[in-house]
Image (cartoon, rainbow, N blue to C red; front, side, top):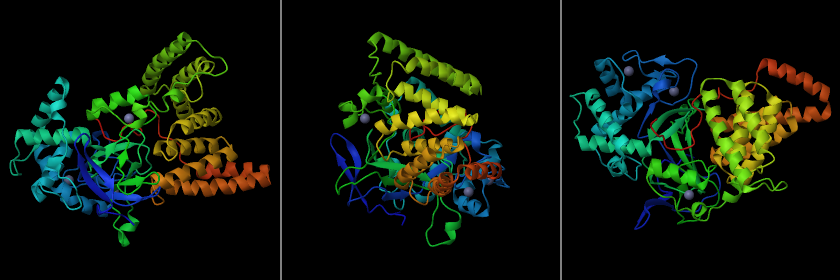
Length: 491
Ligand SMILES: [Zn+2]
Ligand SMILES: [Zn+2]
Ligand SMILES: [Zn+2]
């Protein structure tokens, strides 16, 4: 079931493009091409007491490491699994009396693994840590300063009794983390909780319209007892049919950005100019910038509305960070009123505002209005995204839940079904989010049947259901929600 070996892929290297991975056989939508455990991974500084340091699940109650009082685990199983990786860290933290930041901790975990296993190829890896790109030569002045500071902090933290590494090697490791650190999310996929290094994944090149997706799976405790060892891992999954010999690709950034924005992000974080088909031909760009067909606004008016949107986005982001959610809603409504006569419903500036509005309104439990924006947003997303895009699936899921909460069971159920179909491909049937969705699908199907038979009974039942076990809603909007880039960029 889980492909730990790398026999499904072939490493290639070409003049212009450098390294990459090719399919060694044919794949269909939803196939796991490979699964890879982290070479090393750490929990973000802000969440060290809320997320398990082994499986990265968010838990109400965690057990603390009795020695360093820093590491936290779900239970004995997770603690035991962690010990090989935590042992040296534990004593270094005790000795230093304080814990360094996530970047330093990740570098140290990598170095301790190198100390244990050497620098060669690790089991199941097609590339060694030494051979990963670091892009240190591309660093600007600011990045160099940070690098020097990180190296110094690392040296202060690193125990003299451990294997010693040269400055250049330490810089290499920080460079690798900087451009290859993969963002890990909690089990519901709602929050970015940590960062890890997955060497094989680093070999998969970027395409804005990729044929694969990468998903983080926190693993399954209960299944540990069964024959499949389901530790936390990433999975590279096929989004559609892939022929033998075809290059495998994932998107490092969210497609729902203008070409120029995607290219800037890719250049800034990964130091390359995207030459994918969607960038060179500007595919979908017209839809992302489309204007209201009926009103045919002048270029000047369109420009003005876009500028207004950009200014509003800044105000929204400030209000959001201050937790002023009613202010966010007010700003969104104002902006949408200006946008509606001018922009088309697939216009990216309009979709951004609708997405924010539905997210915050859901949080404020104003589900009717949230559902209206969510529905329009989903319609726009469906025109722009690849039909099996993971972000699309998550957005449709949230929209479905919002409709369910608003009592709009017909649309809600159909959205939940749609999201379930996408997540079966992007996340697979055993992922906790897919399982949640499956439960929601069964529940909403039953409710829909009841609704069609007898509306009065349906509303009575719903009231009772809401009191007993409300379907979990969205996280607070200001929290560190899923990032728009798969690799983690240090803040
Ligand atoms: Zn755990
Ligand atoms: Zn400890
Ligand atoms: Zn591109």
